[in-house]
Amino acid sequence: MRAIVRRELGAVGGTAELVAGEPRPDWIWPRLKTDVEPLLVIRGAHRGGVRVLFCGHLDTVFDPAGPFLEMTGGSPCDAASGDRVATGPGVIDMKGGLVSIVAILSAMHALGIALDWTAAFVPDEEIGSLMSARALASLAPGHDVGLVFEPCRDNGDLILSRGGAGQCLVEVAGRAAHAGREPEKGINAVEALARAIVSLSEAQDFARGIALTAGPLQGGETTNVVPDGARAWVGLRWRDAQGEATVRRAVTAVERGSASDLPWVTTRLALSRPAKALTPVVESLGRELCGLLAARGELAGIGHSGGVSDANVLEGAGLPTLDGIGPRGGNMHRHDEFIRLESLSVRAAAVGDLVAMIAARGEVVSRG
Image (tube, rainbow, N blue to C red; front, top):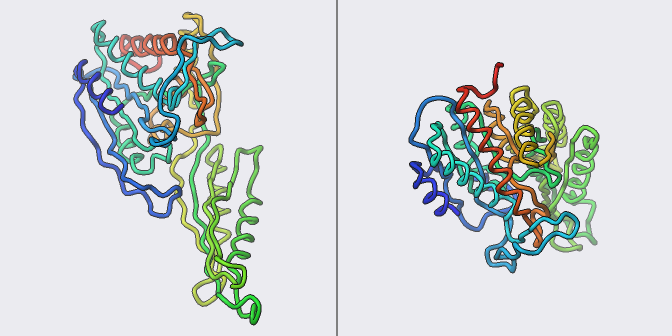
């Protein structure tokens, strides 16, 4: 996909560069077996006017040596909707979005529409964009609006606001002892870890979008030794800035002890994606896009998701960003992931309409 988008956008005047990311923290789960490729940035030849940043991610969650490797279908119809569907790894998350980016920029070029554009292709979105996030965020100040081509909801709704996400590692140091002869001399790190996890769970508030999900866990090797070490990775989710502050306090609150005061509980924290609020500019653009979709016979509303994307990174860097503007589909991260093929062209065309209108009026949101 990297080679394909580079070739296709080079044909419409794009100039490519690879932007090295940062080292991924060595404690983050999952551990990586290989290095991740750099961020691919392609810049259009035209300069001037509204500056638009297109963004999509190249990676999927699927094992390249696994059984789910090819796209199939295309002619069968979904019995409920009558849509033509195709199944394959990443077809909706987000190869369909990448096809949309190429199609829109190719159409703009063919129609002679002058547009100051950049396209960023992220290599590690599915594992948190931890390596590419800073490089991606550095592009935000040079643009006026961002477009992230994650799939819309299967009902057609755009996803204009998102919760935030991060990860923490809770590590516990205890003291080993023989579990039968002198258990009283031991300090059980697994028990201390369990208490820390229970403490974290008390901050959970689903109504406020706060979720702290522990797992995987490590600790102890046998039942006849009091374990002297344990650790757990915890996924962190929140809806807004207040929720993020709550999560930070909860993680800090479980820390205790020291090397001479066991059990010693320490934490490491990476809050990689701030929550993406629905700002007035984004809402205005979203409603404009909904109108353009309706004109093409595709209904859409404005939605929220607890899931995260690279739009969180761009919006966090101050760039108004539309998200969830890709095609319709479903079953993401499963071996029956699918795309509704008709939605690919309709939704890409509507986004192209919006981009052309922005370019023509010379401002992101009309003041008329």
